[in-house]
Every structure is written in C-alpha cells, then in structure tokens.
Length: 123
Image (cartoon, rainbow, N blue to C red):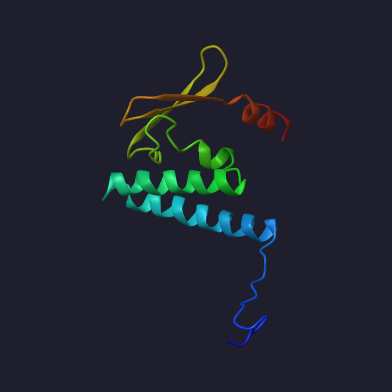
C-alpha cells in the first residue's frame, strides 16, 4: 500500500458570509412567493413554506424585514393576503392605525399609520 498524500481530496471553496446571506435572501423570497401562490389551493403547504423561510432567516442571520413580517400571522404562521384570509381596516380612534385580522386564528396586528399622514402633509 503506497501512501498517496493529497490524492483524492476535493478542494471546496468556503462560502463567505455575504454569499450565504445572498443565497438565503433569494430562497426566502422564493418561499414567501410560493406561500402566497399556494394559499388558496393548499393552506398547510403554504404555512410550511412560511415556516421554512423563517427558519432559513434565523439560521443565516437574514432578517425578514417589516414589509414581509406584516403579512405573516405570528400565531398560525400563515401568509396574510387581504381579502383572502385576512381583514384590513383603518381605525382613527387613539391615533390612526391599521388593523390586520387573521381569519384563520383570529389574531390581530396593529400598525400606526401616522407616518404616512405626516409625509402627505409635507409633500
């Protein structure tokens, strides 16, 4: 038996953290798009896509962002699509805010809407 040092080793390029984050970002985008598309046909698969996207974000250190998180139910983890499985209302009492209600589990999210009002006044 002849010792062959270095033979048979496969050199792989280590991915930098920027590459990993970029790939994770793309996969999260794909999964959330698929979740929105499959909600009407298969709600369980849609929830699974959202859970997988959240897990990828946690493991890779990529934040989902406010725009994405606003339309994911915290309680049942389903994608929220206005008019399909959630109700969106604007309420003026105690400061203007947007109320998003999940029709699946009944959870409620409230977002202040004052920022848009101020921007409209200035412009």
